[in-house]
Length: 130
Image (cartoon, rainbow, N blue to C red):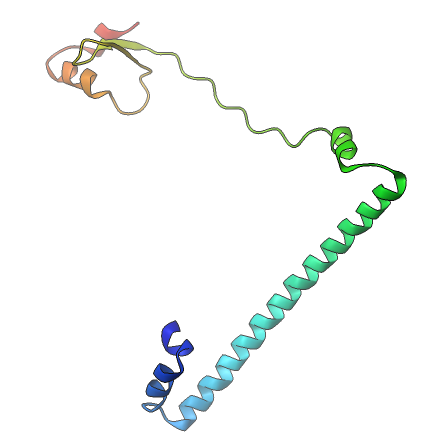
């Protein structure tokens, strides 16, 4: 649809199949949509300009007082701290994989393939508890 609207040749081809009244109605609706979009964009630009003006005002005030941005950040504290990662869960089970390497599993998530094979062969999960 967008390709038809933005390509003059395709638009003319589609317009040949429509009546002039339908084209006129489409033009009015399209004009209304364009005007609404223009107003939205102008409102967003006004908000951005207002924000920039406020920031510039504070920048000028800081410069007049001889305060640098670094000093202000240091005074307010560093940037918000990132969320701490959750501590790793302790392993609950120990088993040997196909290569004989000792592996552990917390009991969370999908059962490791090697452990699942042992369980399928009749072993009990309690046998592998640490």
